[in-house]
Length: 82
Image (tube, rainbow, N blue to C red; front, top):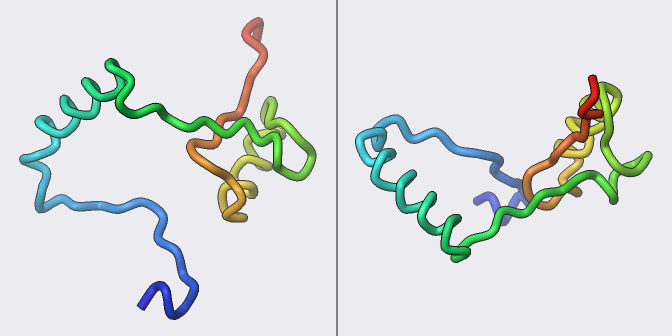
């Protein structure tokens, strides 16, 4: 049905399987450590206005996320000295 409507799903919530979370979080951690999976980080280089930085980048980051143009986790950079 999602395909017919060109709809998308963002995230999920499965409380009925919460007893399995510890086991699968451990599996995911191992996969991250051994490089089986690599997280994709999107710093907004393709977002309107370019790279996401500072508080303004937070607003643009949410807009970018909702636009459907982001790939992976949207990351906003902040100056480390602040």
